[in-house]
Length: 66
Image (tube, rainbow, N blue to C red; front, side, top):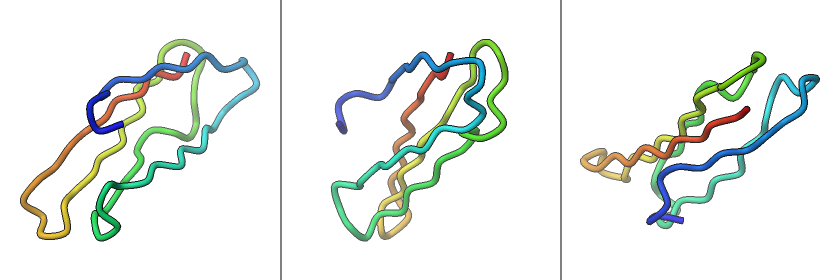
């Protein structure tokens, strides 16, 4: 959701990677997901960055994988 910029998820200790299927509001925007691999025990800050087609606007969404 464009209005929700922070998410959290609890995962098991055996989970080392999460898959995020983020869809932009504009199909020409670019989405980059960072820090969703090599998860460690404790808090992992996952970042979903959306950049507009013209590159002028950026929105960051943060996910906390615990």
